[in-house]
Image (tube, rainbow, N blue to C red; front, side):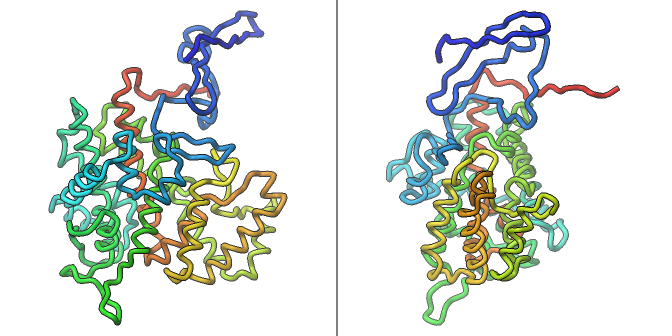
Length: 427
């Protein structure tokens, strides 16, 4: 932080105002306009907050021009390739990677916290058959606030850590129960002998009684490569700075609401098709295209300003270069093509779309590069996960980011209740 200022002139009155410039450790500096209304009698106007920093943070950094994403200073590529999702969770919550002993303790704690109260089973059962997993998940997480109401007034760091670890541990169980409810099949309880990601796959796939389907040679269905693939997807989704759902979590938390209610609000925000729900739309669109021979015609439709068709999975609000998460998933997808028997028809369609978009001037000029949603759906489909569950997978990965952001907000003495202003144009 320095003492530099920026001077603004009101051309109507010729009055000048000075505002401090605050420097970041990475990325653009900001103009502190917190006193703007007091000094000028006016508000700033910034639709979608595209030029407004709403908080100070030391969790996640994005450089959209370079296509760079870091958690606590570590590049996402390093975390995705060389560290597990639980290591990433520990990093976000504590600011550093765990030692071997710390990781073991963290893992064991999450395993034992993964069970949910029996009353929540009845809540989930009350939903109609074929209910979307996201609506069940948002409701289940909100209900957790009633079971752990003591988290409303946390007084020390250990209480915050307990609250955070509890929700991270229970989200996969709630998601798996929501998934099985949507299919009309019995719930499977967590198995504490299994790791975080394997346990989630187990809860989605196992038969009543906990038995797994076995292959002809007697091996269980869940393969190490499947665990690695889903674990990587969780890591890539763990946090993404001040996006719409994270901002929602912070805004709800700013009212003094229970942390789990704020997370539930984040889940609802993520469900939107312009946010986390985009991965469902990508797969639906690929299935609509149907065959690689149809790709060129759909590309032309996407370029036609008079056609409402839009190519899903391309472009990003922040990234003006290749989404680094998409690069990591592309690499993973290529590695898994044979091992997971990825749908060759969908792969051909995706490859052709990618080939055209990366070489077509229309897409290049508009910085429409493939984003993470473009690649995740094919991998999740290969894991046997049905499309309505795609965004719930996103939730499992992102919960640690949301809760870390919420904890940071709570610990910031300068935080205030969110209250944007408006430009009134009514009568």
